[in-house]
Structures are given as C-alpha cells and as structure tokens.
Length: 227
Ligand code: DX5
Ligand code: ZN
Image (cartoon, rainbow, N blue to C red; front, side, top):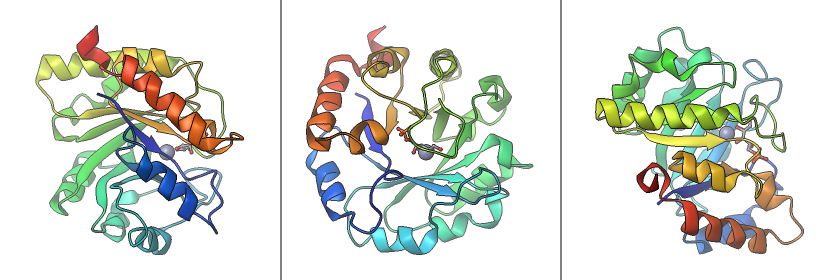
C-alpha cells in the first residue's frame, strides 16, 4: 500500500506542533518529507540541519529528507539523525551520483535520487540497483503549490517496469502538485510514496483534507501490484 510523506514546506514553521500531531494521527502517513533548499540548486531557501535536528525531538515520524542543494555529497552527514530514513539527492546536482548514493548508505540510512521534470529516468539505469528510493519530481523544484506535470506518470510506470525487470528494491516516490485531481492516477501508476504539501496544509480544514487523501490511497494505493 502506498504511503503519504507530507511536506511541511507550506506550514507555519514557528508553530508546527499541531501539524505534526495531525500527521502522526493518520495511518496513511508513513514519513515526514523535509524540503531542504540552498538558494543555488533551486531559487529558494528553506531550512537545514539545525531545524531538522530540532524536529527529531518533536515527532516520531521517520524523515524523508529531500536535498535540493548543489554538491550534496559535501553535506549528507549533517542530515543523519535518529529519525532519518532516507536522504534524497538530485541526479542533476551530482557529478558523482554513484559515489554519493554509496556514501549515504554507508551512513546507515536509505539513499534516494530525485529527478527533475526534464530528466529522463533512463539516466539512472546504472544506479538503480543502489537506490532505496527514486523520487519523481512532478513540478520544477523550489516551491510548494505548483501545478502537477503529467509526464511524471510515465516515469513512475517506467520505474515500476524496470524494478520488476531488474529485481530492484527501490521505492517509487512522487513530489509536487499532488491533489484530488491526480492522486488516483498516481496511485494506479505505481507510486509507493506520495509527497503532499499544499493540498493538505493550505486547505481550510487540513485534517479533513488528509482524511480524504488517506481514503483515496486506501482504495487505489496498491499501485503496480493492482495493474
Ligand atoms: C518542491 C518540493 C515539494 C513541495 C510539495 O520543491 O520538493 O516537496 O513542497 O508541495 P506541494 O504538494 O504543494 O506541491
Ligand atoms: Zn520535496
């Protein structure tokens, strides 16, 4: 069954306790997605290791850390906390992706690789066996609240087929612009991890929105297995 990895990017950073409690109360939420932006790889700055370390004392959710930073290999150690489940780096930000993925795994956490909308999944062919997560960006990274790009669906399907063909173990994640118009298609395409920010947090009743998405995942979230 697919799980939700909600992003706090559009939350009120000065008052996260209600938001974290809401995510913890939902059986559909399996990860907390943390968007790190450096103002260089993407045209925005969010937060970094001190904030993430503080969050680890405030929640029991495992962290899914999305590094939208240039040269991530220099910084990955800083993101290892007792909550870190995945550290995800961008294919486009890495000169030596194979080495960075091995570096992350050597720290005892799962390694992930993210793909910008313009990047083909085939570019990962020679590292797929070393990845614990492949994150398909369905918006150009940098901001919450953007429109979903449907090209992500064909990438998810390719990753699903390739995983079966090669016997690989990576989870397939999707990030950006997910809402009630596209979540069923995303589930049916085969996503295992669904990142959502504004479609939960920027609604008048976030708990009701989250419950609605949890229901849609329960009905459709068998992904590739159901096809
Ligand atoms: C975009 C981030 C996303 C984003 C998701 O650069 O990686 O995680 O916050 O937010 P929504 O769901 O609002 O697109
Ligand atoms: Zn993200």
